Amino acid sequence: MSEGDEGAAATPPAPRSGGCLCGAVRFTLRGALSAPVACHCVQCRRQSGHFWASGNVAKADLELHDPEAQLRWYQASAKVRRGFCARCGSFLFWEPLARGWTSVAMGAIDGATGLRLQRHIFVAEQGDYYDLGDGLPQNPR
View (cartoon, rainbow, N blue to C red):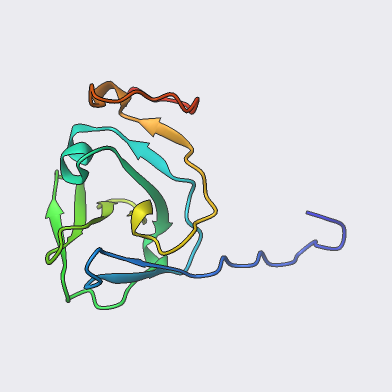
């Protein structure tokens, strides 16, 4: 904080839009999106076809333009559900039920994000067909 900024409210981030491949599911992120994380768990690899990169946003800051259109939720476990487009199959969201945030697929966001990958998680489950050589932290789980 620079001198004279005491008590000044932080400027909210500009809204970001995004959606699925076919355009049936569209969303706007009205709040801050966390630095993305790449997940290499078996579930993310099976659903996405590779590893999955996502950033987190507060649930209240995720606006679904037409939530009844083609967005479907798959209950992947007792604690988590995954959101995807029923028309084109795009994997868009990962949502822990007992938390106040939703993970959003980085590839579903329109245009540049200005963010950089923060770390890799569940690398103990990563596929044997690729290597991680970007120098980012790697968590086994």
